[in-house]
Image (cartoon, rainbow, N blue to C red):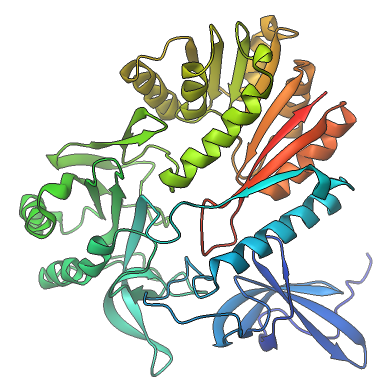
Length: 483
């Protein structure tokens, strides 16, 4: 057996203080270590050039290490003061938005060149679509309860009832949110400390992650930008539920937010896994309605607590407008034809496309049955005809419906972050469509898929980047590929 060669720079678990010198796709800051053995690269997610950071080595190879950001010791000269409480979910909130856009564009184009093997990628770039709202753009937030807090002055964990987010770099430690984070609804976040005080007053314990015990686990809030209504979901374990009055808590929420409260649900999660919706357990409507209504490009969509829906609906309108622009660029491939909308989720793209085309038959496919149920209900609600939705694995659906081969001229792809599985991609290619509109929330996997598509005769006509999540490293891509 070959002996594993260790690097001569860092070891796994080691904590480093390092200056970030460059930026790579996905929000990875790049630092470098030099010694008598040469130069060594260190990647630190959620960091910026010019920052001095403290990071812990998670993986190390012979030439580079992947680290976890623990703390920013010194800010970059490009960062500015903000009026919001800093949280781990917005690592770049102190960086002016124009700088964020530049980093996202530059690193994504380089990714397509390196992984997708597209040498002329810059010539194919259409536009960078910015989010209409830089702050308070999210329509959903999950706040975690914790029995372990963090004392920022003493710089150590303490036993404390917290409600907010996990402290950066930890899974066991909570950090109170005491005010507006700049991402979600200002009124909700300003009053989160009052909700915490109410829950703490009951004497019931928050979740203790290492011990896997406690009562309060999560408070999930969804917001409709159309109506300004709020949907609350309190997640607890079943132990201690007889000591907590759910109706009284609903009354408390109404006293704080008035008519903005569309509904209040309660979820029991006795699983030790760290998620809000348990695979087993119970979700119960305690007050009001169990759904809120959102609007995109003139169409209405009902959203339940479990529904997938774009987190930034105002930017999603711009994203979908770009999809429509590319799809309808050659309208003759849409009108009076069958269009496949694969990985369609709640069918938003398909419904909008059907409402703007003539006699097109949109066939939406997604493996998540509840999403397809929402898609059918929303299509009926909007009076959209010419759409069919199937709850099925995309690969198996294409195998079981050979009648679509050579009948499809346009395919819409909107897969999950993992991209399209190679076997499924081969089935998509076999449909022999003239055009693909590929929407990706993870350009890294899209870049991988581009290489496979290029071997099948598809070339990139144009692409745009969409900033769905300001102050994070995430960027979405809408790409038109043609034979």
